Length: 237
Ligand code: ADP
Ligand code: UDP
Image (cartoon, rainbow, N blue to C red; front, side):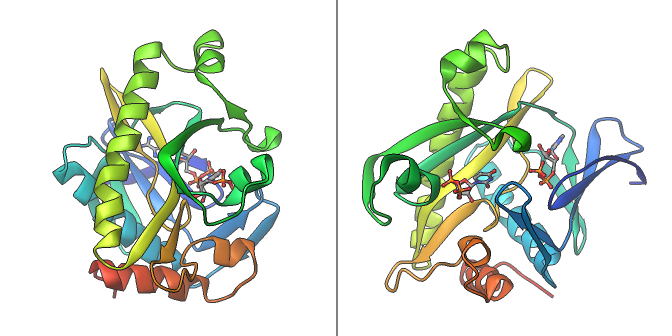
């Protein structure tokens, strides 16, 4: 597979065309950003850890019947994926209150929410990713009603699979963000599932093992990601 021109350079990943017009290469860089790109740092090994973490999770999701863009690992920091026509939407599920939910509603961090809460956000850094609902999505044509239903169903299915996967290694899946795209007539999970885009706490101590360590300046960011990877059995070099 030949790597060709860059398609886009995001805050943490770069995306490249390949000689197959249906496939892309995702390069997980060491760059780490928070607060819509206001806080940026390079963290050694993060690209490799996230690339391999993402490959492991995407394979688990495929095994559970969730279509994903993941094809194969091609280097320590790169994966081959299907080229999707991405929806400009972020799908968030929350099992425990944290982050923007606490700020917005004044609820205490750590409260278990039942049933889990589903939220849509518009993917737009300049607007600080505002929260939107099904009406905004339909009225502005960001996705069709049936795509909205598919994204919600798949996002909840991911919750069932991953809550158990993490619980089995002593971790709480607090919340996470997914991005979907269209591949032909199929709705497929794209982007990444790594500790950059979810919250994971140790089930006993509630120690934060995700990007909140970076957002809140707690230190030990990549070490925390590596601890989660090691508990899951993700092979790192
Ligand atoms: P951001 O866009 O938040 O800065 P990244 O640095 O992760 O994030 O950039 C990766 C970009 O690649 C995102 O815009 C994401 O939507 C896009 N992307 C992820 N997977 C695919 C895919 N399979 N096909 C097309 N685009 C993708
Ligand atoms: N999230 C993300 N990218 C975003 C916004 C949120 O990956 O642009 C993830 C975040 O890591 C968390 C979940 O989505 O796991 C919910 O995030 P929240 O709305 O609480 O926003 P935050 O205040 O963390 O940005």
